[in-house]
Image 1 (cartoon, rainbow, N blue to C red):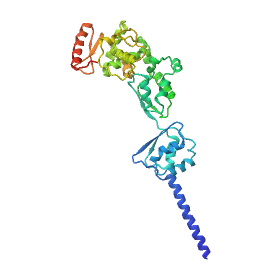
Image 2 (image 1 turned 45 degrees about the horizontal axis):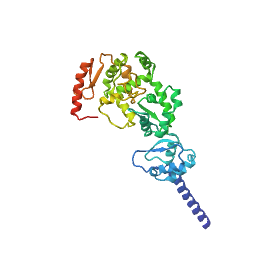
Image 3 (image 1 turned 180 degrees about the horizontal axis):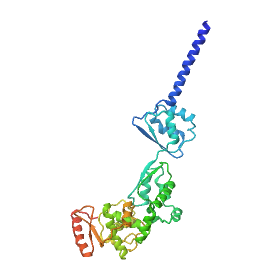
Image 4 (image 1 turned 30 degrees about the vertical axis):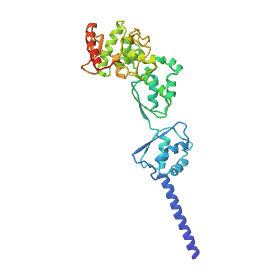
Length: 347
């Protein structure tokens, strides 16, 4: 009888131990294992990351790393790390966390506009996806890619239509570039191509002119009118005489794109550069900035009028005074020069 009691006690202790072990396993898999207080936390897993690298990034977010480790081992995740951006929710358990990291790469919204050069674009994109600015710039300048798609380095910026796009964070430089090529082809619909042909411009020429319009006015509603001025000059064989192209030429010649130039001087108009439209009748070899879609469409749907000149309107900031002849323009210009002198703007 005594032996039976001992055996019963041992069996009971075994059951209790098994219960504790089972509870521990259950908690390891299904107990909440997040240590952050906010509703969610974002985890970035770099391409080629090791399991240890992943664990190091997760450590501040987890209550119990060993519990996560057990589940990761059981599910074979340790040898199948997938790069990407993953969103963890508060109070997730280890099983849920591993499931997210295995299959729920969360995309990011990538946006860009107003970039003056490929270098600026590369930097802007590198802030939003895994690819660094050097690899992005190299892919943008890839001579084989450019030649195959009828671009040159001077007009390669035309291929990147500013907008908001959804990408996976771990997108490579080449994947980003290829996606942008598809978006470029999608943007230039039959309707837009037809309009370009009607006004006598190729798509890349439309973009170049749109970049000038973009730099001339920030007012979207005024862009078709400004575009109409440049189209009048272009169709009549005039030089465009666009101040923004001179500013770009100065920056390019000095290799200083960070400089701020608020006033174009007469001496600047003599700078020998293919971007200086005061010297050369042809359109610049490439865009002087990345035009918004509104600027591109402003050129394609430019306002038909008789204006050939315009200057900043000192009474309606941001807009311009338009003139049909030089004498009227000179009167408007005198007001502007008087105003800019009063502001003390010399450069």
